[in-house]
Image 1: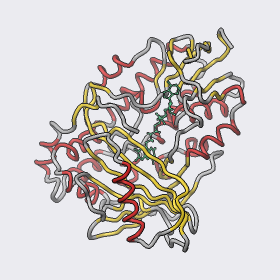
Image 2 (image 1 turned 90 degrees about the horizontal axis):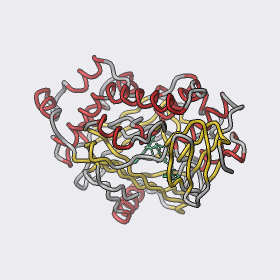
Image 3 (image 1 turned 180 degrees about the horizontal axis):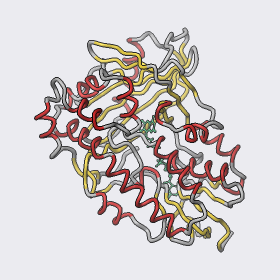
Image 4 (image 1 turned 90 degrees about the vertical axis):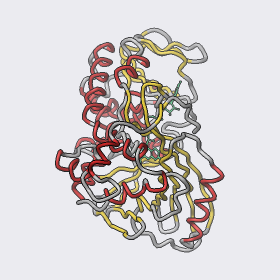
Amino acid sequence: MTGRNFDIAIAGGGLSGGLIAAALARYRPELRIVLVEAGETLGGNGCWTWFASDLSPVGADLLHPFRKTEWASGYDVRFPGFTRTLTTPCSSLSSDEFDAALRRQLPDESIRTQRTVAALDASGLTLADGERIGARAVIDCRGFTPSPHLKGGWKVSLGRHLRTKQPHGIARPIVMDATVEQHGGCRFAHVQPLGAHDLLVTDTCYGDSPELDRSALSRRIDAYCTAHGWHGEILGRQTDVTPIITGGNFTAHQSAQRIEDVAIAGVRGGFAHPLTGNSLPQAVETALLIASDADLPGSQLAALLEARARLHWGRTRFYRRLGRLLFGHTPPDQRWRVFARFYNLPQGLVERFHAARSTRMDRIRILCGKPPAQTMRAMAALTGGGGPLAERVAA
Ligand SMILES: Cc1cc2nc3c(=O)[nH]c(=O)nc-3n(C[C@H](O)[C@H](O)[C@H](O)COP(=O)(O)OP(=O)(O)OC[C@H]3O[C@@H](n4cnc5c(N)ncnc54)[C@H](O)[C@@H]3O)c2cc1C
């Protein structure tokens, strides 16, 4: 197919590209859209977790057609010395279900998997095999690109889906279990009960490098499962490498990756929580924004998203400061203490933090506490920390 055949072409069928397509199919079904993904399936090989307090009612409604695992009773966190249950309901969506739901919601002509976008411009996409897809507006959702203009660290993880022989007895997710050995970074286990015998066990590390040492992480998951008496069949594995942005020159970053009149969304556009690295709430918001402004010419859509990204960058400054505290001024083996202190704070504050909507009072409470973040030290941390995020991601 050549010429201007589509209203909107989306490059990259990951979280943000898929949700934009879902929002357009739902709210603007008359528009012809195309979602081009290099991988075999949409959404890659992983899962996204979020909290009920992250989303507006309209945002939650956008995710309604996706089959999720939901935990109405909230989640636990574990640190040396304390365990806490937070009653905020949380949900998880696997990439398999993401792919299946998008295929139910979108017409066949809208999904092109195993097709690589070689070039984008204001009037369409050129695929690696030479095919040209014309569109009125083009959105680039191809994921994060390492950038010399941004600073920070990395969140690296390996997950294992395990079917246990005996019921595992875990009622709700353990979002962060930092009682594990730290191995030179801020390391924690994350556990999701997907059924009475099914668990997703993930080993995650906040570190200075994007390198993913699969065998080391796998051994740590073995040890964690053994310690909890969880034995059984391994049904699947997933890996993830996410940037944790602590600073940089966002304007220079935007200029460096700008393609004239092409809109940029997802983590590539800067739409993520700088400290958790999560981006589902922002991806939902961006998808709804695009659906409500879907008639704009491509140039105006590009300008709208660029301005939104700058606004998001400005509003999330505080989380980059916390990241500098984590990466710049806290010894790697002690980084878990920053999270331990945080998870002792009131639940409403924790909810606003996850949603990147901390109030001024929340910020003061987070920064001004007992060690390790004595106020003066915390303030000192705001001036440095993290290296350039220019390394290639080793997913
Ligand atoms: C340990 C860990 C846990 C995480 N947990 C969560 C979580 O619980 N909740 C959450 O919100 N986020 C989580 N994240 C972050 C989340 O995975 C990402 O933020 C999210 O997937 C980013 O969405 P995106 O659409 O911008 O990019 P991606 O999902 O990376 O999508 C980009 C897509 O573009 C495709 N692509 C790239 N180049 C081309 C090309 N040339 N042609 C065609 N297609 C192309 C890729 O194949 C990919 O599918 C986690 C990350 C890590 C590391």
